[in-house]
Image 1 (cartoon, rainbow, N blue to C red):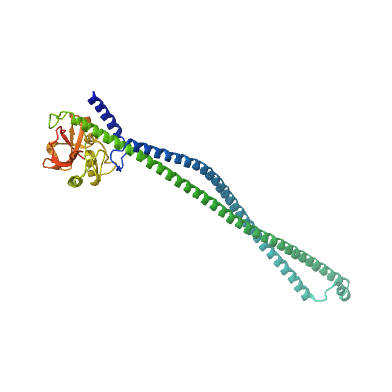
Image 2 (cartoon, helix red, strand yellow; image 1 turned 135 degrees about the vertical axis):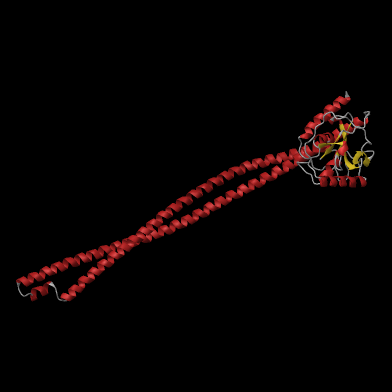
Length: 402
């Protein structure tokens, strides 16, 4: 009955751990329930901070929407000012053109008056109504003189009228041109002011966006770190308990076979490591054994190891990392490595030991050293060893190539 419960426990924990995230290196082996509770409390505190930060973010988002409205209004004002400036420029150009035309007309009228004055001088400086009466040679001559005077008077009057009208039009055009120029200058200043306002609103909006993003990133980072700590401790405890449970069951189970028969075990179709990586993993394991480091449940180095912790640390030191390489238990390492027959083992391949010849009853894992020997974290009593691969009964019929 006890054995059945252990198998159910092992299967349940294996399924759970299979989909877990990568655990970090624990400060202490096999975290206690008190440590896990403390981690949960820390995570809850971070969650409170996140909730408080979320409230601030909501308030800041309102400010951001207000800034966006201000920026939009400033942009509309800027566009209106540009349109106003364009109209003022056209009006100024038209007024300037009208003024130039008026000036031309004044000049033409002035020239006409000058011509009349020249003609009068040529005809005689005393050519007046009284002179005509005194110096005429007879009625017909007098009539001719008066007719000429009338004609010259009418031309003078018309020329003077045109000059005065042209001069008035020129003055009016000058005022319009000056006013249009002032309007253009005002419109230009409006455009500059509106652009400054729009730029300031946009910059304020961007600063608020950056501030919000920074706050959000920070609180989420802190919460994720707290959650990862809690999950890591729970996973490490589960791994250690599972390894420990299987090992205790194995110690209490009589194993009669040196190597279990193949009953159709399946593994990966490919390996993830290179020969160079496998050589580095072997060298790492060798150094830990020769340093006589202790065996502690749930530990994966650098100062102590359990069996799967030594395997994990060795290949991590060889260059494998998440997601290709994760901290699993012995059973899962068997399922997620490429199976190699015992007769074809190479240094760096993993060896597995089971107390019933099934995957879920695998309780120990080692690293093949070559020549029928292995590097292993054996047990609390024996520590880390360099030993024969058959020194432990119940060897699975396949090794695992990482």
